[in-house]
Each structure stands twice: as C-alpha cells, then as structure tokens.
Length: 590
Image 1: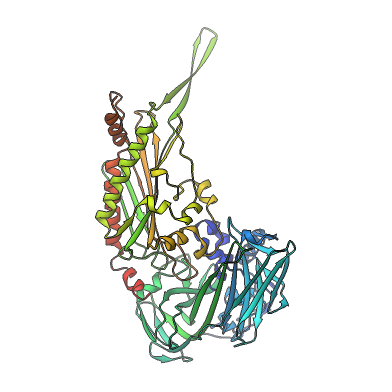
Image 2: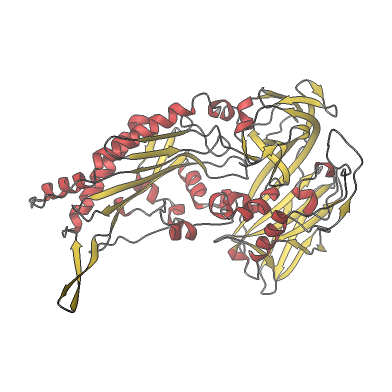
C-alpha cells in the first residue's frame, strides 16, 4: 500500500526506476476529478480532510506528470509468463482524512473497509501490464483501475478472497488471499488509541499493541509526510510483532522513502501487520500474495528534521570518503537503515562476482599542423596509435586469481564472517539468472571473470538498465540466490582499468557492493555497503619477459595492492561511521 505514494513523485524526478525500483510495485488508482473545487472553513490548526481556507483548484502538476508516466509504462499482454502477479488483501483501510495519494487516486477508497486487488508487474524490464482477457475477484469480473491494477472494496471481515485470471490465449492463474490477524494500537507514548498522542522525532517512540497469541506476522510503522505537494505514509520501520516496542528516535531518520518531510502538528500514526506468501503457478512468471491489516491513531508530531527546499535530506546515511596523497579517491557508502543492515549483521556471505576489465587498450590521437611557404599553406594531419603490449590470456587469468586472493584476504580481515567460495555460489540454480558477460580478450578490451563467474555488478548505464525489473523483491534473482545458499548476503566486485596514453598504466576503478536480504515484502535486496575506489596506475616496464615478471608487472600497473588496501580501509571507515547512527538499534528490533 505505501508504495502508491511514490509512483507519481519519483517518476517526475526522472531517476525513480533506476534508483528505487522496489517502489514501482503498486499503482495509483483513478482520480475522480483533478479540477474539483473544495471549500474550507477557517481552521487555524490545519488538519486533514477539512475544508480549505479559500477556493482553489485541486491540481498538482507532479501527480499529472506521474499519471502520464505510469500510463506510458503500462502495456497489454496475454502472456502471463512475462509477468509478476501480486495479489493484495488489505483489511481496515485508514481514514480518507489522511488525504494521501492513495485516497486521492483510488476512486473506491472506503475507510474502515477491506480492499482486494491484483497487480501485474513486468518480470523483466520496467513497467506494468493490463491483461488481454478476464480478471475476476470472487467470481465477479473486475475492471482495470490503472497501471496494471485491478481491484476494489470488499465487505469488511469477509474472510478469504479469490482472484481468477484467464487470458485470450488460454493462460490461467488462480490465487486466494486469506485474512490476517488484526493489529490494534493500545497506546502511543502511553496515550490510549483515539486520543491525540504527542510524538517527538527527537525522542524514542513507545507503542503498545494487541499481539494475537501465536501471531507471527511482522508489522510496519508509518507516519504522514509530504514531498513536492504529495502526501503519503512513510514507514519508519519494519519490526517483529510484539506487545510493546520502543522504536529508537533514529528511526525517524531512516525511513523507507527518502525525500519525504514528516508533517508536523496534526498527523496520523499507522501500523500495518503483513504476511507474504510466494506461490508457484505454471503459467505465471512469479506470484505473490500479500495479506495485511491496518490500525491508526491521531498524533501531534514535533521535532527536528533537516530539509532542502522542503524535501527531506539523508543525514544519517553511513559513509566513508577520502582523497589520498597518491591521488586515489575512495567513496564508500550505504543506504539508511531501512535499506541497509549494519555491517555487523551478516554472519555468512557468498562471493558471487569478481570481474576485471581492461579497456581502451588501443587508442588513437590525431594532430593537425600547418605551415606557409610563400603563398602556399600546407596542412598536415598526423594520427598516432598506441596499443597496450600483447599479454597472453593465461597471464590475465593469473592476475585475476592473485587480485581475488588479495581481495578475499582483506574482506575476511575486516569482517567476521564465513565466506561461501565463488565456485559453490556458481553451482546454485539461481546463479544462472544473473546478468552475464563474455570472457573476451582482444587488443581493445580484456574482460576476465574470476573462475568464469558471471558479472553481477554492472558499471555502465546500458548494463544497469538491462538489469532493471519491476518484479517484487522476493522474486529478484539476488534474493533467491541468497535463500538458496542460506547466506546473509552476496558480494560483487567489478574492476575497470583504462589505459593511460602517456605511460600505458592501467588506472583502476573498483566498484564493490554487498547485498543483503529483504526488509519486509516491500524492500530488497538491501545493501550492506557500496563503494568506488579510483586512482592512477603505474607506468609500464616492458623489460619483463618471463611469466612471473609479466604478472607482477600487471599487478603493478593496475596498482592492485593499493586498491585492495583502500578497500579494507573503506570497510573499516563504514563500520566506524555506522556507530551512533541507529543501524544497530533498528535492526535489533527485527
């Protein structure tokens, strides 16, 4: 439900589908009338759902642009195998007075009632789909609402609900969503539900809840925020279900959606218990059933929050940045705690990708000179070509083997983990679904994967775009691979080295990422660490002719030892910067 609010907003920012793909998993519905006029009586305290102080057109260009973008990304198909099917059953919808993007765009929103629907996402690539065929909920034909979503209001506490799909080409799918245990707020900071509780973003938040005996489903906690005029509930955490929880104040800085500024003063606190079930259907690419139940209570929100032009700022993200005297730059970072578990969290990691690429190994430069003799002007064009010395394939393999061994030693020295060897990772069935490149050697480029592994960490825009998907987190190959290997995360490294014109050195650019598990059903994979290390290579010495000398020379001109040293330094720096920022406190509640 909460991802509805983002679809409109970040589409307008242009980077949505590249940077925050997991938020593209739910649609907005039909808005009744973008030009509807509303009147408002004087209301000094603001509030939600009241009348405006003056007549105004209820029009937001961001919503309109987002709606257009959503329509452009929605196609029609009769092939269910290309789709991820997401059935959603949500009980006890929150009040319309919240005036979120959901309540505006869902024409059927009814507070306190239940909602059932199905969303069709593209399993590969970006976008949503309408179905060329029929969609029935509880045996009744259901119309397409918007952007691949079909659904509507169902009777409160009406039990399970069925979703039946049949395409014009004979594809079929049937799923049933079961009700979940209700969730109920008892008190917020000691104030009974229904009364306005004082909540400060500078203090811990204490919630008492009715936790059903034997209930195991976890729950989200969210508070209203706004960005660029669009309001939505922004989750401050996903936690294990319990009778009482003390949520650290840092959680207000580590939210599911960056950019939202929480609305101070009159607000709502929303809790949402959820459970997820993955179902294998023969005709469908992937299928998921989400059952949830909501509860809410009014609050008065206060506290310090940093913003820039009214947009929230990531002030608590851990990072480590430095520029060394030998001209290396290190930029290591991680998302906030909603998207990034602490580096103390993983106990077992799997090495999934380690690829070295040398580029621009053949370069040409053209110079133009002219001279005049008498009345005659002569122009001379000279093209100079430089080619990196030919290195046998076996020597590149040996370089990569040595590079990897040094990287692994640095990793294990910095993290107290068990490491699954890359050979074992490559035997997993889900490994075959990862983005692959060829092992290519030529004059212009050398691509050398360690142990013939696949490339998991793309570094060019075209590679990044080719790996995008709209599917839900637990259908993503990285997440499936972690589950198959029973590990807490997977490690990917890509080293790009470009030849320098002057001295044939190979200037290194090492990208690394350590992915983690999902955080609830909405977010994943999470990220323990990202990093980029760049710097100069060293000039080539062509006097080496024996095998060991050539490999040693390759290590030198790529500055391998220095890159590995800085990798270890960056991991230590990230761990240090995590301290005191709430990562440990927040993940201790999961």
